[in-house]
Image 1 (cartoon, rainbow, N blue to C red):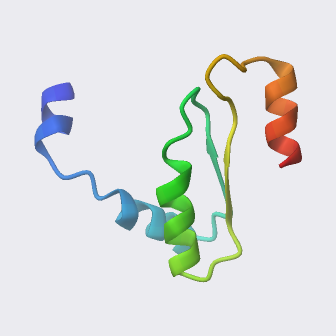
Image 2: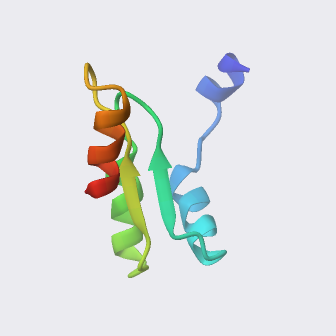
Length: 73
């Protein structure tokens, strides 16, 4: 599994565009390192979609308070 993922092209942007075309409008990144929110937002912006992306947690800021703050953003 890991070897195949390392050796093959991911096609992340195409997958994101496909989800946007299907009408998905909210992208949540459930990770202490929300690094994928930036490329997802760039794809959203490039397609003029009304969708949004949201990172849920931050390093050393887990728990209900961080999740509530993320939702408020």
